[in-house]
Each structure stands twice: as C-alpha cells, then as structure tokens.
Image (cartoon, rainbow, N blue to C red):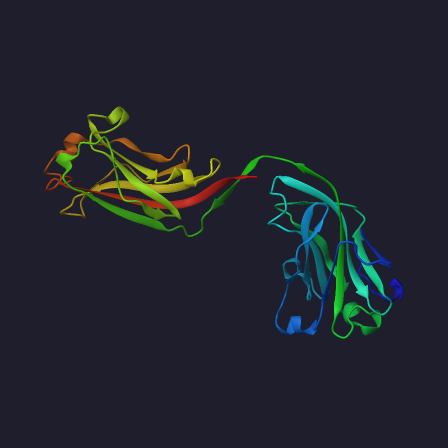
Length: 319
C-alpha cells in the first residue's frame, strides 16, 4: 500500500512515511476496538514507558479529542508522564514519531513533525496529532490499520536537551470559598496571669487556626489594650514558599446580649505563611472600655471572642 491510497488531510508541518521497523520505544495493541465507542471510552492512556531518562505515555482518542473540536478523525499524543516528569520550570526538548501498524503489509505508518523537536514542561505535557488519521481511512479494512477489530500503535522518543528555565509561583483563587466561624468563651478573666492564651484549634480552608488573646495587650497596646490575633495553629505545615490569603473578622460579643457586640474596624485580609503566621490588632479595645460593665463585654468575669475566617486563595512556588 502506498500513501497515495490514503486521503490525508493537508496538515502543514507533518511528515508521513512508512517504515519496516517496529517503533523503538513502545508499542501497544488495542483489541475489540469497537467496544471503546460502545462503552463511551473517549480517551485511553497507555502505561508509562521510558525513553531518554524520562517516563512517557500515549494518549489515544478513538473519536478525536473533543476539547480540540476534532471530528471524524482519531487523535494520538505523546505525554510526558506527570508524576515522573519535570516541574513547571523545567523543560525537556524531544523529537518523536507516532506509529500505526498496517497489518496487511507489516509496515508502520509514521507521523513526525517537520519541527524536529517539541518542548515538554509542567504546563504543556503533551504534543501530538489532533488529526492523526481520518476514521474513514482507519476503519477501511483494505488499509490494514484495523483488522479483526484490533490495531497497533507505537512511539519513538529522542530527548535532545533539558534545562531549568525560571523561578515563579502559582496563585490559585478559591471559587465559592466558605466562611468558618469559631466562638471562644473565656472565663475567670480576672485570674488570667499569663501573657497570652490560645483558643482550641479549628479548621478553615483545610488549615488549622487559633485565636491568640492577650489580656494585658502586646507591643504598643501592652498595659492599655486587649490584643487579639488570628494565627496559624501549625505554621510548619506550610512549606517556606507557600502562603494563604484569608479574610477574617475578630470580635468581642456580649455574653448576655449576643446581638450587641463590639467589632474592631471592618474585615481584614492577610497573606498568612510560615514566616508571617498571624495577624491582628495590638490595640483591639482599651482595657477601660472592655471592663466597663455598662457595655457588657465582660460579664460575670467572662467574655466571648469570635473569629470568622474565609480562605480566599493559596500561592506556592513553581519548582
């Protein structure tokens, strides 16, 4: 069979040849091909294989890759296996060919790009052919690609070079972020003799938090104000290059008339990290106002502190 018998689409930059040799690095066979469509299997990924010191796999779309709006063709791609490949800021340049066996003649149809190599990296892990072959030519028994409902694909991969390209970070904002509210009742206020006290830990945005309470204040509020902070309960759980963007409110609530409360300013936002694990107010409220019985923030030697926390986004380094 010659390529003249096939109705190749005019795809710029793609070389098509026939080879007597088996693909060097990987071959996989699909049996009962028709069942893929019957069972709505839109994509098949091969097992990993190694070439040039990296692991790769093939991704096959029997009805074309829908996200590329491919119709009436099969699609085939080479994928750098993500678990073993380089991260975003590493690049691997590789030349490759993808193959389909003509079972009638024992030859392989090979597709390569005239651009001899492609750059694979963490953001772009796959390269290949959206329109590898029309379904009409693929299923035509006289072409030998699909025989007895079976077909055979293959790949050759030759790594040319690799390099580290950058340093950077990835910001992920959270859609439909959920606010968490934590209530902490502090009793026997007059007997508190430590510099600070921590609430029980609570979870917001998959992270552990706590409220820090300073009955005699801290920093420039020491001796004149209450100080209250929101803090990460375990800052070491974050990598040195990770941070959390959170919106939060801290407030004191009248233990008797909870509808009447003191709230310091408006909602605050802050990037919390291992190096900056807490944020709050050294001068949250003066000790005089806090202890004024007519205001009700301190009733029966007790007070209530509330925290509302919403994690809005995360950021981490690109490795």
